[in-house]
Length: 163
Image (cartoon, rainbow, N blue to C red):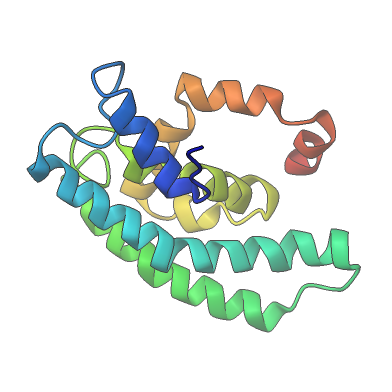
């Protein structure tokens, strides 16, 4: 039996397994793969921890723990994430996507937590205040594959996202 349990490892495996079918999400050459790996690391080590803490404090703590948002944690994480997003903005000033000019796993890995950050935790100003970052988000979040995912989210979760 073969088991992989980490989402980024699963994504890399699927990308390699189905290479040549559809979008080359991991790149075709070592030179294309290197920046994808770099931005996947940035996402997992820098972006994701801040974004998850913000979503947790703004949404999960209230709904599932019945406690108020810890505003000090949110403020600290927003400051950290703002600095990280400034780096993203600089990269996206020169490229359409994080790892270059082709959509990749680096972009894909950002979609779920960013959707929650913007639409559930209501922190969209982090993106809308940065021209290139906002254009990148609009591009990747409007992809047909992500739109299909949104269609299967339970109706009550979609209602929470709209409120």
